[in-house]
Image (cartoon, rainbow, N blue to C red; front, side):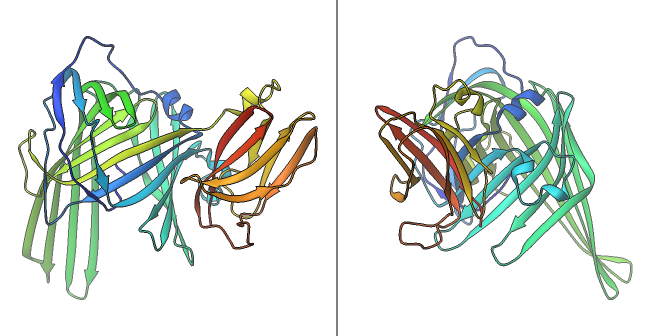
Length: 363
């Protein structure tokens, strides 16, 4: 489940006991219901430094209190979308669930797409694609990995990757094996709220062997342990990884942390069909050239505009005085410049009713 992107952070977590609660599980329907939700993520790659943490113990009904977590570093946005609305849909015709992430260091951004097929028996990882702005890369997994569903306490599986790189009479063979087990469940508190989660423990062993003329010349083995806190509603919301060489599951020094800092849920289109919501539909989403916005304002005073995630007005969009209509946004700012790729908010105010929905501009 891990999607790793570089970063930097500075606080510790405290584990306390929790009151009785129902054990969560994650089903195929949970994944499909995530479509339309988005997250803001901050990554902390602490190497060569570390951060002191308390990852807690395995077991049922735990409480992890990260409510005072304070983070700095690179940010990313992650969106759960219908693959049909993505630019690489043709490469993954069997996909019905996709993740779309934009990673930015403040100067440039990379867009990542992960494609999956999900039903209530399992999640199949079909492949991924990258958009670097001036080039793209699409990779279809020749032997897709499958995670059996539902995932619950004590669920386990093994990930195994083997690669060979040859150059002249030499070759490098690498084997990366990860044993995954859900070893705890309970309640996780983050600055934006609390969620019921499963904790996934992953023990990773990476072996790198170099051969010269068929004879083993060097061999290197590295180990690490990581934890991911996974919510049925919001996917992975917190990840913590140990330093290299760690074998203690109760490690106290982390080399990497990824945390979700905000969650946005779009208004479902079905809510708009009864006429109670004047902002009816946005499509395609994500979009690259033109976004269509269907509204029905029925003789009301209207203000329709695009905002960025910091609340700054990016573009005012003209509308007719009343009735059902379609408005378009060409992805440009008020002065005609191309808006940067990322998350934007379409805000419609009709009299005293305000509706805001999120869109993704993919360049």
